[in-house]
Length: 605
Image (cartoon, rainbow, N blue to C red; front, top):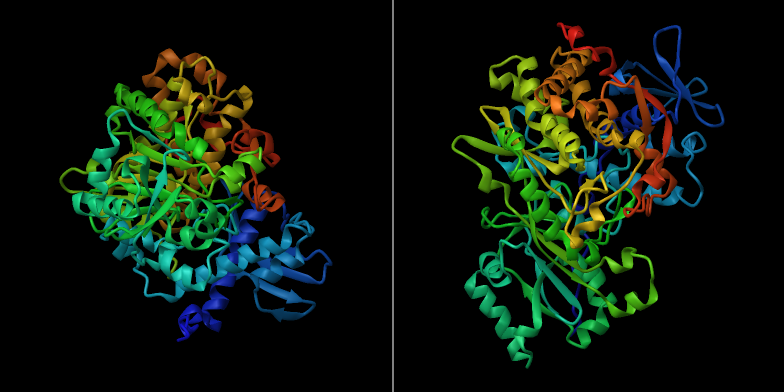
């Protein structure tokens, strides 16, 4: 009897209709013009009627739009103001054509362009899904639970134009595993032989305890019985989670020899249901919200990287987290701010001997099978508090209303006070980690979870530690296993960790939203950031030498550009072991704090 596979259905493309397609193309063209002008790839020309104009490479096509140029060369462009003409004929906005028409100005090389167009197409596909669904309004989201907010986010990374590529997923995978699809799924469990796999675990935990907590006694016994039924000694194996997509599309074939030789044993799916988070390869347990996050390798291409996990990095992950955790928990100032990290408490990495023998560098072929467990933020909640991803502060609902505007309105306090409390919870701890401990994170929206009370930010939790954290002072003593986080870079690049990752990469977008929707100008916002910085410096006079050496009130700073980076190499845009060497710089940005260098100048704006 012939087995029939499920037939394709309308569901894969039901959201692709003319009205929605027109809307999401307009939004993406708006973002493309804004971010490419911000990075100096495009130079819009001011016209006599107050509009701006850019031209295609051949000069035949023109785009006209209104814009307000804000601090940090941020181009705030109303989407409905954009028009396109070919000669005198109006044309529909088309994000794919936009990339083709301006490819020379955008420095898109022929070998990069097809993959980049693929990423743009996928980003549009996802955007159409998000704008076609019955999504909650910003006003509704401020009352929603943690996971409802997580799955409602619609923009992705605020700087990258092609930010939802996820190349490797098909249309069915999208509805199963994309965060915005909000489809709970079961993860795959494997038994991996200890000859090939390495378990690393926090000093505060042991493997048996963690497996009981994550799987439960009954599930754990079932998996061990399956190993024993195959005549295998369960003591020779670690139990390891994997993404179902990764199992079906990569592991079952690329690791076929390992499976045939019972180095890897498929055990089945677990009982618990998980939801994909904004980072796509991290999953939150919705069957039991007390359990840990699970993060697994996922060999899809997104924003310049194959989203694998390195077994080499996994080896040191818990030790690095334990070290950073001890530092943070032992610092009185950070504790006064309620600042904590979510530890990655255990990790498993599997090394395929064939790829190990074939490849010297640590590339995507060596990152197909690894996983980690991260602490659950729910354990940090007190009475009356709730969790929300910091990405939400840059979120606009399908009608264009900002979630941050609704939070401020519902809080009952002024915008200025709300922003001051937010900066005190978020930015002040980052300053302290940098100046006191030479410690940096990757503190963009997706990597922080806010704890809110009465719609106000009470404190923040930092996550994604081991892959992103760095110590900028080689003299800091680290455990041998954690040495890879120690890095040496020139002094003039150290402050870029705040200027680029915080100011330009995140706060620039929040400031623009407040400017547009809360009658809170960008000058008021950066004035608040300057006040927060001066207050921190006044509270820590012992660090005055550090403040002068790493000057946050400098006149300007080098502009490191993310889209330039992605479009130069959209398959592997940076060497993560030496990221500074591959940065794409384009001129300098005027520092919005420079005007408030003197504390005496800190009057009202």
